[in-house]
Image 1 (cartoon, rainbow, N blue to C red):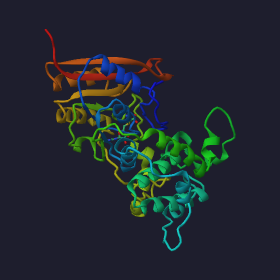
Image 2: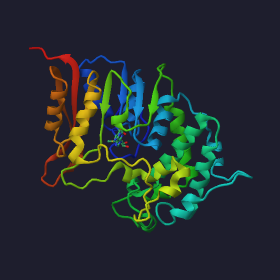
Image 3: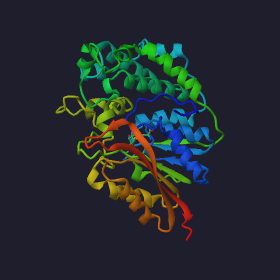
Image 4: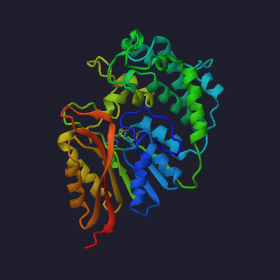
Length: 356
Ligand SMILES: C[S@@+](CC[C@H](N)C(=O)[O-])C[C@H]1O[C@@H](n2cnc3c(N)ncnc32)[C@H](O)[C@@H]1O
């Protein structure tokens, strides 16, 4: 576990538990860099760590909800939203006219009726906040609380009944799911107070697809979606579409897929880096877009493509430079079906020429 204290994340593929080791490996290579582009930013953990280390950080993610979290943690240097103010945002403001989009379209799907009503009110009150610092804090609170209240912390299934009918056993955290927003806000306000700080650099969070991201930095960290070799893949859009809907609240009603039981909200859905057959080609394009930067790629073995294929690609894209393939060890404690260890790897292409 990292000695630098980190925000708690319950996000699929978060590098929270690994970021210190990733950073140590980069440091051990003696690489020199002042700026970092975290192009598949997710929870912003790598960006946050880089910010603590004094780098100029550019966070990117394809989803708006993630970028709002990134803006709060990476761009902002303080939290101006108090706990009392956050709780007030759960109440309707007199004379303000509210939509009931979540109540009307998601009954029985992800949250209880009471929670749906609170989400409708809160997000519209948050959108109306003129103070950007407070507004981004409010989004942070809502997105983190919604994640923590979901079984598996995901939105790919309409399994509210599983949460409500859960009666013990090995799985789940019923107590956390049932905590009211008011209680969860207290935890996340404390996080924001603790984790928003100034590092003296012009840090930014942007929102584009990796291949359309035209930001440049000395080092680019590439932590893309992972495909296991079993062939079944749930996209990040499928996992988190509901939060992307909340980040685009006014557009939800016109973007619900009625054919899906979980009423998927089709906003910012993209296949880029989400299809195994095109992954290597897209990765090649991404590397070539940043070929003058130090390239750091996170991936797991037992997946598609293999670590060897990614490493070979990097050698072709950065001819004459040093390539390091580093085994970070076990990912969780799971063995796959063939009893091979699932290990996490770093594949690093430096800008230093190979010494003959
Ligand atoms: C493995 S996760 C990254 C996790 C992150 N390093 C962390 O520690 O939280 C991959 C991220 O890529 C984002 N993503 C998926 N496709 C993308 C694309 N084409 N361009 C940019 N981001 C994308 C997802 O939203 C997700 O947050």
